[in-house]
Length: 416
Image (cartoon, rainbow, N blue to C red):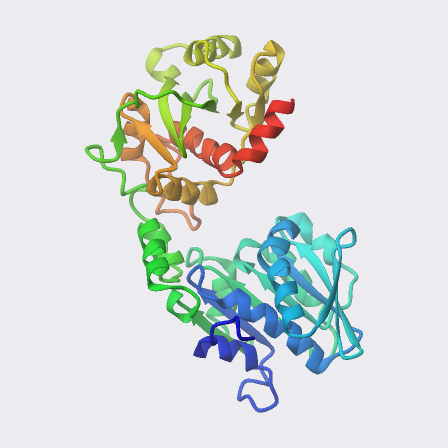
């Protein structure tokens, strides 16, 4: 354990709340929410496994994430290393999504589940569990979480929840955090300072990455509503640049397709570690007084690209007819874009702040939409107003589909 920094007071609470000498040992659940990188998942996963061996042998448990892939990346991989350092033996059965853990002749099984949508609830039906661990529970549908809890019918079973905050009307905040006493749950709120392995310089870096509601949620760890401008830091005098006079090493295009609604295509050029939006095509049928066909939009796409060689085009996933039009011409590699709006907006904000993408000042429709794009304060969810959002959508597609998984995406698109 010499390689680890001492645990913080709050982390120690997570590690020991279930112990026989703890005042909280009779609680049925623990809830840890708060800032990103605040050390809650690290100590909670270790504590969860330690609790299982203090109470049970040869029992089944569930560990759940938004997807099994994210669960393995964020929880299981570091957990296996930590458990090995602590003297446990582990056996990850990848094809079955089962983690077996052994300690001093005892063994427990941990089934891995992804709770990404309403259909996920059916995956966990039928199993009997002695406890369940949820990583980022606020990203999972209520049906999946409640079905998982219903499987915990073994005497002495407990529930373990962690998450970053969402909007204040979120079902988990209303049903579990606000009712933690009724639910007999221990509630702990984490801030970045509760993670002893996070330096002051790194905390400052995270503080500089977020603004508005994202700052309140991910830095302060508060359940707040989104209000005002989606990208309030985009200033027309300081946030845009001229098209650099350099030799770009790669090109790509992002498309938000529309017939009645505007169509927005962005041409991106990569230089060193930055992608520049160097040109764009924007057609608003309501303003122009007529609609374009798929073929006419495709002709405009070819004109935008010119004689450049594209690595890939990413397109609004709902634009099936336009995707087929591009494929039919057999000139460009095209894949549907990833379309998680809130996660995409957060990633665009980070990419802009870290200068991973830059918007050139000749892209006037993008500049206009950045100044007008706002959150819908009337709804109960995190949603931007569906106005002035077409360039915003195609920029989001670029970030989530090309930038966010750049090497893998480009390699995939090139093989097609």
